[in-house]
Structures are given as C-alpha cells and as structure tokens.
Image (cartoon, rainbow, N blue to C red):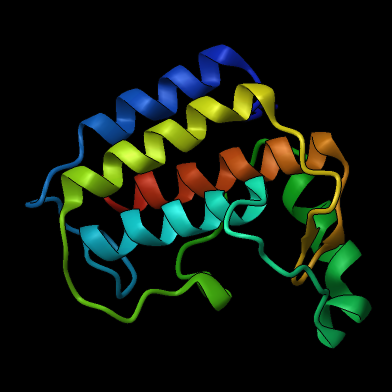
Length: 149
C-alpha cells in the first residue's frame, strides 16, 4: 500500500499538486481548487502537530472509529467520492492557489521526518504510524483525483 512516508509516494503527490492551477475544476464535491488546497494544508498541519492543535476523539468515533479506520487502511482502495471534510472544512471561497500549493508540498516533504506521537484523529482515534501514512496518502490522493490529477 502507498504511504506518505515513502519517498516515491511523496514525489508522486508533489508532482500531482504541481499540475493544479487556479482553473482546475472539481469533478465532484462542493470545494473549489483554492478551498481544496487550503483544506489539505490545514489537514496536513493538523496531523503534523503544527499550530498546537488539540486532539480529541469525537463520541461517535469512539463507537465506529476503529471499524472505519480499518476499512480505510486495509487495502489500496481509494476513498469514496463526496466524503465530509470534517472540522478542516474551509468556508472562505478564494485565495492564492499557488501559495497553498507551496505550503501543501512543503508539508508533504516534511512527512519524511514525521513524528507526532500525540496525534489522535477526531473520528478514528489513536492511529499507528503505518495507519497515518496510508490514510494521509489516501486523503491527498482523494482530493487530487477530485480535481482530475
């Protein structure tokens, strides 16, 4: 399975991000390209532990989180279309796509040295490093496929 912690996978994602531009259009979902890139930078900052996030599993996640995590990390199947963005949803409608791309690519590159033992996913709960790596790849891939790259 692909993981964000493998160099070739990070390179692939960075190349795909580079092919986005302000004219890229979503093939599904409600986000425009700026909202998607901003969402992804916020999401990667969250898993990396930047900006002092607080980590707490939601009550519904305590019931269904481990089952959903296993389902999302057991094989190479991509994430389904139209999954909810959760707390990292972006309400603003526009901004600098190129700047968000640069931030997102830098965060992906930083995954080479990932270390955030405090990370707790708000729905899945505590995750192993392997699960974080697989899910981080799938999350990025999901949004890049959403915009056809």
